[in-house]
Length: 305
Image 1 (cartoon, rainbow, N blue to C red):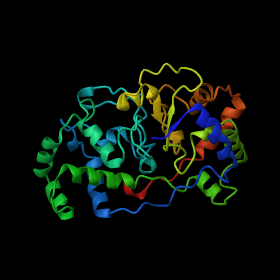
Image 2: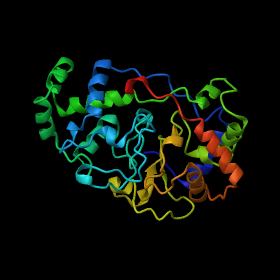
Image 3: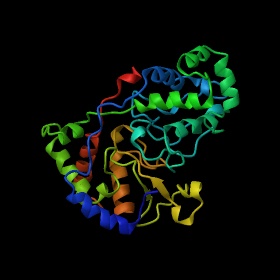
Image 4: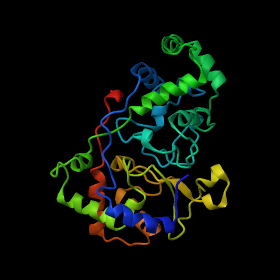
């Protein structure tokens, strides 16, 4: 498990600043099995996965927008309100773990969580498998999987579709590839500030985050009700540690943080500066960093059409 302590931050930041570029462009595509993708897409949008047939994956992950639902907390079956902000599904394939607390190691494990969560889809796989076998999905599974409808195959198909949910060719990616005109001068200044102020210590790599855990409230308490990684490990040192989210498409995924406390990107930047870096940023610096963050919005995938 990669956890970033204050000491590690102080060591990591200078190394990242010396790197040629601490952020790298997304690949243009991900190799997938298109038969599984088509089946997984159908399941993703179908409320048949839920216990009462009212909630689908797409209920909380709006693919025509930011890949989340724009709410502080999502609603599940019977109108139940969740307790954590729905993360975007876009580019999740590049995250080192899934969910805010990292409890799922990959997209397969992630796909299982909402289906069996009593306040999300509230289903169980014995019931779901029986339901799917009594539907047109039965033949669809048999055409792809030799053993037909199984828990493993349901999750495999959904995960295969989710692998296609990447957003390459963002203006910043084009800039990194050599197109100096792809982003504005102000956005370039925002990127320089993003690095110089220390944001880059946690938000770097292909996904501009999503590759480590960090404490929410490094410099002072954020009064988070959720204990983060501690909920999984029960280790005291993991309290308030969360997976650092990817910043790709962040301009489209408000509200921000695991508890949805920030409604705007500018406010989120100020919160991060205060609690993670111990800094107070001026309005001009915040504006330039926000302009940089907006250049991380890529093209929506063909697979959602």
